[in-house]
Amino acid sequence: MFKLLTTAALLGALYLFVVLPIVDRGERAVDTVSPVLDRLEDVPAQVEASVRHAERLSEDAGDASKDELRRANRLIGCVKRAGADVGRISSCTERFAL
Image (cartoon, rainbow, N blue to C red; front, side, top):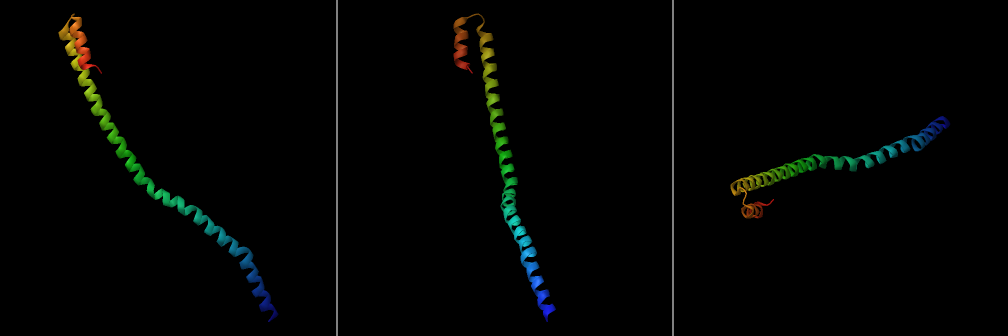
């Protein structure tokens, strides 16, 4: 009977001083990692949204560049047609100024 009580006491002490701290440490590690993993789930959606936004900005910049190029070409054409007439060149720059 004494051996049984000693074994039970040793197993209880082993559980309290070895097993429980390890389990608690593991639970704390999981609790620390869980929020990080939850945030990682949102990353693909954020990346996709950023890519879409960049594509829209690129398209808008392309449209703006096309407009500026068109206006610049019109200005060049107007200045060529104006020849040496300063008044007409001035009118061209006012009309097609970038």
